[in-house]
Amino acid sequence: MTKVHYRKADVDGFKVFYREAGPADATALLLLHGFPSSGHMFRELIPALSDRFRVIAPDLPGFGQSDMPSRDRFSYTFDRLADVIERFTEVIGLTRFAIYVFDYGAPTGFRLAVRHPERITAIISQNGNAYEEGLSEGWNPIQAYWRDPSQANRNALRSFLAPEATIWQYTHGVSDTTSVSPDGYSLDNFYLARAGADEVQLDLFGDYKSNVALYPAFQEYFRKHKPPFLAVWGKNDPFFLPPGAEAFKRDIPGAQVRFFDTGHFALETHCEEIAGVIRDFLSRLK
Image (cartoon, rainbow, N blue to C red; front, side, top):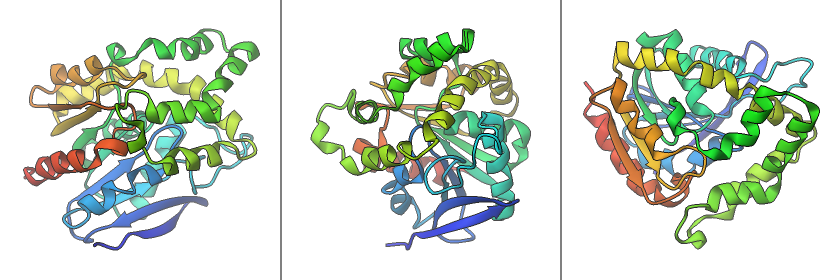
């Protein structure tokens, strides 16, 4: 078993917590988590890959063990999340790396790719969307807040932050819910219950519209650079639909798309299968 190290990087005064494992000189893979999770969601994937790859999983700003400064000191937008993660890669010495993007990790990682295409060796998207056809009707309440950022519409989104909503995200679309460990959603709910975390997450719900606005730019990057691309998708995801995975092939004809009979948090039920596909994919890169 490869040892996992738990570290914090000082990113211009901002502390970013991260997990790291694998040989320092191996192909690097940056794992970017989503809402409302942390790098903990990769707890099984990291040891499954780290015998052959250098695997790094930071907690995004405001998530997990990374700093969560007050909203008057830090603007919780996806541009700022990407700024911090971009500098994080520079601070720890990542110059060329593949990215694994899930949920919020996708618009964060795709920003890095657009800004620095020369740094990205490959992209793995696990329910990480870049196409409007990938958005389900589950986004309707959040889209209402984009159109009218009133306090009433903001408050209507608080139900997404309730403990039962987190559990539902983990279990919806899973054929056997006893296969989903409670560790993941219990830890997420612990972090969501911290003072001020609700307002941070509501800010990010509101700013998600900036990601949709950037979809054309992301797609242009895909068409121009055609990075080696693998989609591993929980096909029963209530938020990001299978057409969003298939759409990558429009812009990257060589993209590989694999569906798994599970929900949003596909690693909770299909980590072994997904790790196998990733190992094969990364091993074929030049």
